[in-house]
Image (cartoon, rainbow, N blue to C red; front, side, top):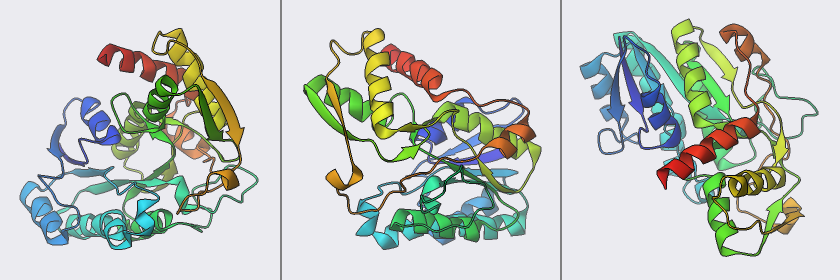
Amino acid sequence: MKALVTGVNGQVGSALLRTCPEGWTCVALDRAALDLTDTDAIARIVEAERPDLVLNPAAYTAVDRAESEQDLAYAINARAPGAFAKALAKTGGRLVTVSTDFVFDGTSGRGYQPGDARNPQSTYGASKAEGEMAAGDDAIIVRTSWVYAAGGANFVRTMLRLMRERDELRVVADQIGSPTWATGLAHTLWGLALAEKPGIWHHRDAGVASWYDFAVAIAEEAAALGLLARIPRIIPIATTDYPTPATRPAFSVLDVSATRALLGDEAVHWRANLRTMLEEEKALG
């Protein structure tokens, strides 16, 4: 069995390669191997490789920059999944594509369920919502949130750098969501792919947090592992105190009960996964 995996230099793509199941061959596609803005190139590689599966975690994720680079965001996040779906409809094979909590407006009083209405408030969210629709009914679409991994470009590693450089940090405390370790997400993506269950699914780590809560936990866990010599003062602030070009959902917790029931497992709490990631980060030096 053969799978094409996009974005293999990214956090989720590299995790998918590391967790590739026995009996599968993974064809690793980075930006040099496949330009996701080129729909003709997508069609050609699917025709040439004729994969049983395309795992597409690659995305334009620069949330604020997307407001000024809308064409690029839509090309990668919307048109590329559509091109994969169209090509696979001719050759056979399943598309698994990764989406985001940003497709929601953040006004829910409960965890967002897969069937809830999309109402994105940013270009990034709108481009991912369009990508979900372009992927079609035969695809497996997995929404996630706040992804991080050792060695990647993410909130955890940014916080570690700032905590080493500064005595005081100000972190938003009124945006609530759930951190997600990339390795756990990769296992879920493979699980859903092997279960051959098309539709929209959600994955996140157990528990919820604000960005402030997440930052405090990063400091405490990193200090315990010797990654920080001292814990700086961390001050909670409001979203209005830290204006950004893109609007972010105030509440974006995803309901993962259907995913966990299908796969017959339980989500690991985000703090436990954070600790594992920081152990990996320490091992990287």
